Every structure is written in structure tokens, then in C-alpha cells.
Amino acid sequence: MASLGRYLLAACCLAAVLLGVLAAVYVSGFGRHEADSDISRSRKTVNGLFTVSIEPESSTVWQGDLHAWLVTVKTASGKPVEYAAIDVSGGMPEHNHGLPTSPQVTGYLGNGHYRIEGMKFTMRGWWQLRLSISAAAGSDTVVFNLAL
Image (cartoon, rainbow, N blue to C red):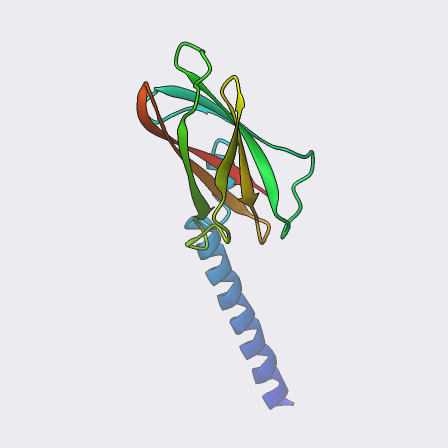
């Protein structure tokens, strides 16, 4: 009977240690992004040259499926940016990996609107989408936080 008591005590201690480790990981940053990050779909670029908006082309973004996004780029004064060069990158900062695909701008739709195809999110969580934009006004970048 005494050995059963020692096993139960050891199991309780192990559970307490595991809970402590999980709490420390959570407090150190895991899960913090949702409270700290702006998940808006429209924002100014880092240097303020452009205002950029993003939205999925379809109303639903399915995990694991390829999908397209629409991007609108305007100058700081609100004029549409015509024929910009846009590079797309991103990933999951908490998992330290990039996007599983290589999305690209596949079309200029006019009036500052662009289509990005080849987007894919393989799991739920915090993703970032980084757009590097070059146009007549200059070059700038913007990062969008996506909580899926």
C-alpha cells in the first residue's frame, strides 16, 4: 500500500511540473499574438507610401486548400496604384516556417486592384502575409496578421 501512495505522489508531482511548463510557455509568448496583434485587413505600409487592403476572393478560406486573395493598393493620398510590382511572402512566426506555397500576383484588375493566387494555410493559428510593393511612388512593405 505504501508503494501505491508513492506512485500517486510521483504522478501528482509530474502533473504539477507539466502544468508549470505549459504555463511558462504560454506566458513567454505562445498564444500572445491574438491580444497583441492587429488583425485588420487594411493598413499603411511601413514607410507610409501606400495604403493596402486584402481580402480573400471567396467568402471562406479553407485550411489546406489553394485560394486567391484580392489586394488593393493606393497612394498615401488615396489614388489607385497602377501596375505595381508586388512580392508575396509570409508564414507562421510561432512555428518558425514560411508559407507552404509560393503565392504570386497573377493579374492586375485595374483601379489599384490585384489578384494573388496560390495562397494556402495548412493549419489553424497565427499567420503573417508580407507584401513588398514597388511602384512609381517608391518601394515599401506591409505585414498583415491573420488569425485562422
